[in-house]
Length: 114
Length: 116
Image (cartoon, rainbow over all chains, first blue to last red; front, side, top):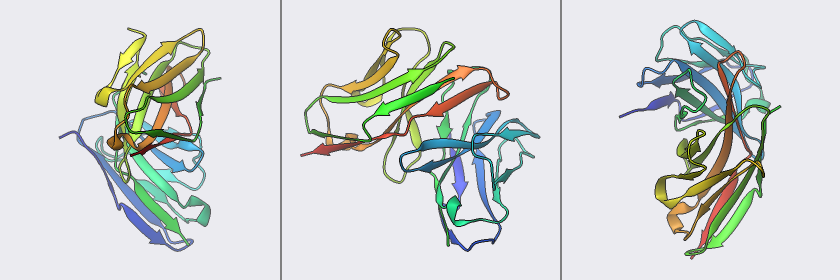
């Protein structure tokens, strides 16, 4: 089954404590990205990756890091989380080369920073 | 610059009634347009997409949308709402270009409530 899997699904952490949200896809997609979803703002892209070792900033990258060492994995790193990073996060993947490609999403990770 | 606007953050309909969710876009290049649906505690999944073929696009669960270039709209409709349609719906526009090869932006979302 085609899947994007992210973990953890729910996390409460304290300000400044580094955390990583993992993401893995089994569709051999080149393109992966992270979004955050906030009420009234829809989804905003944090970072994306065109392929292994190729990453770039999206629209709201401040406070986040990513890496793409393997094609299937794209972890999101919060080095020093702050309360304004409390949000619902989605990992997504798609094929590249065509802007009509469907984006596949993980089930989301609820992050609360206190 | 590209943008997408969904009119109405909340829409409430009775079961069996017409569902109409509005989406307007702005794009300086030919766009691809999508509707995604998000059920509670789940990620977004594709409902339908327009990729420059037929302007009337049919999707899953009886939904359809019509691309109207003159009105820059891509409204989502379903003739008869079902309780299971209660979810949040996102309109998205995608286009070729940018450092990432393509770019997709999402509307703010419309939450659909279905009353028994």
